[in-house]
Structures are given as C-alpha cells and as structure tokens.
Amino acid sequence: MNMTQDEHWNAVLDELRKAQYSRFADSDPLDIDAREDAYRRIRCIDDIQAHIESLAMSATIKEKRWKIL
Picture 1 (tube, rainbow, N blue to C red):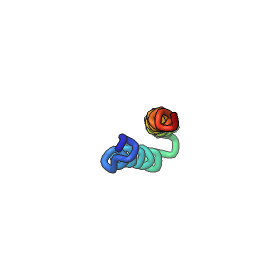
Picture 2 (cartoon, rainbow, N blue to C red):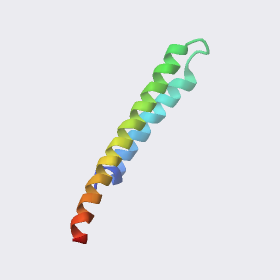
Picture 3 (cartoon, rainbow, N blue to C red):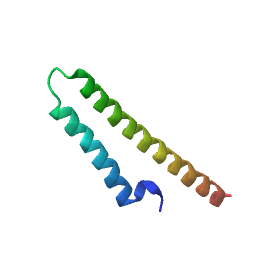
C-alpha cells in the first residue's frame, strides 16, 4: 500500500483543504489578500497530492515493467 491509498493521509489533506475553503468563505468581502492566500494554499495542497500520486504511479509502473520481462 502506498501513501495515496492511506486513509489517514487523505483525511489530513481533506482537512487542510476544507480549512482553506472555510478561510476563503469566512473572509471579509474586501479582504482579497486573504482569499488569494487561501486559494494559493489550496493549489499547493492539490499540487503536493498530485506529485505524490505521480510518484506512486511511477513506482507501480516500474514494478510492473519488470514482471513483463
């Protein structure tokens, strides 16, 4: 099992993402900086998750490649 399939890991990422969505939703209408910061953080969380999933897929592909030979 890799990190992308771990329930706890996914729950932590979801919790972090939800916290930023709340920060965005609860911000003052004129507080553009707070909303932009929350958006950047959400994008970072998404980028980290995508990168880790990519690494996991690369490892899976490498493992299967040797089984074919």
